[in-house]
Image 1 (cartoon, helix red, strand yellow):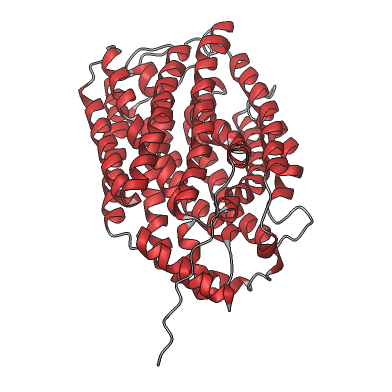
Image 2 (cartoon, helix red, strand yellow):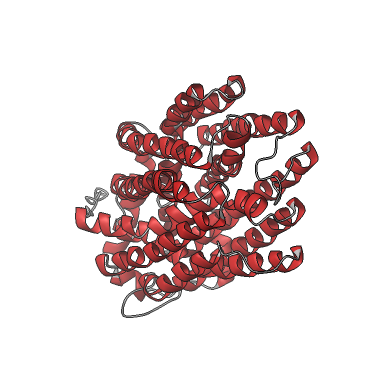
Length: 465
């Protein structure tokens, strides 16, 4: 007679609220800096405050995003192979916290030079240094997610805590900028941006240290030797669910990048808002995103994650197309559409990040290894390439459309109709098309909740043997 196949119970890997909060707080640096302030304000800071030529701004984004794309897989590869008494990931948070904060402050300084090439060189070097140190901290931080728990729904809860904390601060940052910092200075004053950089840079340091002291890594994961680089790349490329997640991630976040980069331009030149009003509008979006995170989480626990993603992202694509109907200088429709976008943006923040750790068990089943750092690095690498395309093309398209840059004698130029038309087209149609493509890919994503549970049981049997 054949013995019945044993189906072991999956271990209880619930995390305490304290651990979830400690992990979530570490995401503040990424959420406020590269996640909120830089995407919304750094391009317009370079063009309208630092007054760099639009062509140089395009070259700037090409160089820094290519370097970011290269450095992320490298950081993930190194963190997978790090062995210390603190773990594989957490030492990077400890030793990188102060450099990240200090270099963020330097991004907003105006060097006392007038030549375009020298000013361009300063911002390029400053951002490359900041991007490198941030990657060295953020990639290991993101790789902590699958290591803290292997439970399918608990990972979603952990990511929800992270997003709830970071989006809440993402609400407070633009509101603080709009109600406190910008009113302290004249319009288009560099001092407002320098003050913002100083406050945020100093705030990054305790955030990363909180995660370092408040979390613990799994000892058994550090005891395994990581596979050679060639084998690592082969397993990553053969992971079919990961290829789907990668496509969903890139196609979902490129619209976010486009909307963020054009946000200030659109509301200043088409709607007619001041800088502090634009910050408050940004706060409306982040507030609605924060309120929608529990809704997305609850739906994701009842339904398949990909189904929730398709529905939520479809709603945001509709909202982006509706911006074409807003007349020039009319504020109230803009507030309504920004509020309605919160549901879709919450899904883009939460669901791809919660789905990514699940594909690691597929890799472990094939390779017998845990390679969280490499997967995180590859995901960011491809995402950065998509971001580079968007950020590099946008200044060039604006220049082609006839966009007028502010100068010493004209801080608030009137934009021609051609520039305004292209601006509205870019912020509405481009994101909607990309979101539609991400919905199609999500429709065919193969890793369901049931299949993931089967993979975990198979891995549990292996560990028992």
